[in-house]
Length: 315
Image (cartoon, rainbow, N blue to C red; front, top):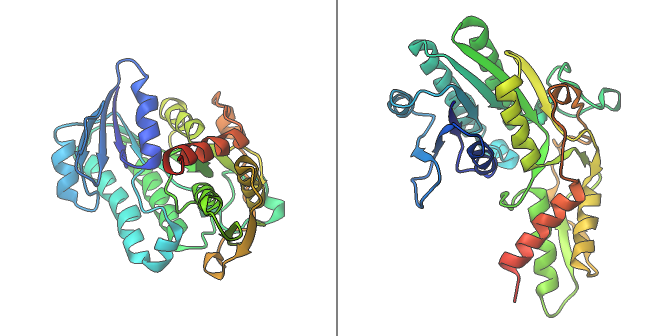
């Protein structure tokens, strides 16, 4: 089986590559924005999906059976600051991929990685949210994901050679995640403040009352691979734990791991008025394919905390 992974040099892409390398007989090509800077255990090419010519030159030489389309602009504050960039990357890049396969007539199955953000600000009566709920995006990032989903499903309906499966992952965490995201950000803040020899230990936070449905990234990529094998064409699957956890609980665990007294201070700059209040997914559709999460959330948070402590704060 020949696989193509866009966003292969990203956080989730690197874990997906490792999962696929365990499959015997697999051939991999990873695409990313950055030139190859080190020896890798798989083929890698720099490619800007916004440029159709870049896609054409690569797919003319390597035509995959399966595409995991992870590449995109994923940071919500950046999307709010520059929605046009987010649209060009997330929607334009996806459309360029789909157009190449439509014109070439080559058979392909695309696992498009969308986001649970498309559901918007969920009402209590909608929880746990199923894939049948109509998307109501709250920001340019989630709007771009709805648009890209729509293109994938439309091309799958109108092109006999294209199959598309939509993955809607909820919050996923793991070692190597961008420190702008909540768990590594809290870990770094806590470790930074307790490493100082003087002054009170204090971390800056936004609103800690929202809840999220977290998964370890290894459980997420196992789900993506399963969808490539067993996911039904033109179907949407939530990738989630099915458990709701307050952001405040995550911070409490991190402070517990630090074994220090740490106070919190609300930073208005960290408040997101458009953020969803609660997030909880229904994963029964994914479980029906034989998937189940393996890594407990507290252990996932501990793993991140200990990695950052060891690599950045060990004396």
